[in-house]
Length: 35
Image (cartoon, rainbow, N blue to C red):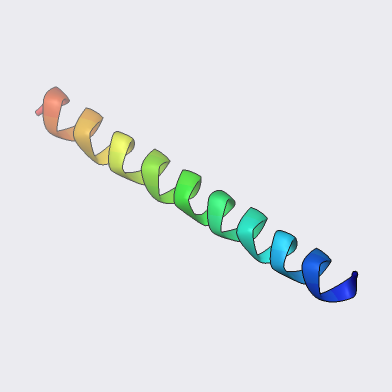
């Protein structure tokens, strides 16, 4: 049970990191559009 919880937690972290990267990419695109 503990192992599956840790793995689920790792997936959650990966999703959070991925979402953060997506936000940063969107911000870069917005800056390019403004220029």
